[in-house]
Amino acid sequence: QVQMVESGGGLVQAGGSLRLSCAASGRISNVGAMEWYRQAPGKQRELVARITSNTMTNYADSVKGRFAISRDNAKNTVYLQMISLKPEDTAVYYCKFSVQMTFFGRFSDYWGQGTQVTVSS
Image 1 (cartoon, rainbow, N blue to C red):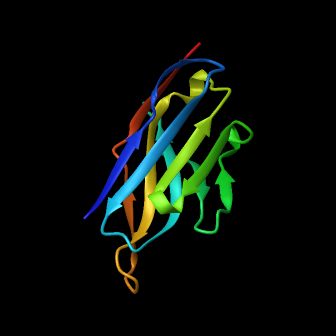
Image 2 (spheres, rainbow, N blue to C red):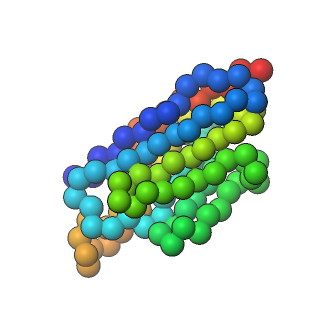
């Protein structure tokens, strides 16, 4: 009932930049927090960036000053602008939305399918 579509991953050289997008569609009344996670091979999934419904943001220490999260509420879309990319940023990146499907309903989490980001040295 809620579909999530991610885009924007790819292969980039160290020092380069990428912009990820994640859009939700379907039965949506409200979207709360929007988050980006990443998971590198052999490692646990980690929170990279978070933006609340009132646009407060939080970042993992490893990406502060290099990544910027933003949202477009009209499009139910979140973006992750990544600059000065490093090989250690290589991972599959996932978005997660907290979605309210009806006005008085509870919030539920929905995940994107993941997009690969590979940074070569």
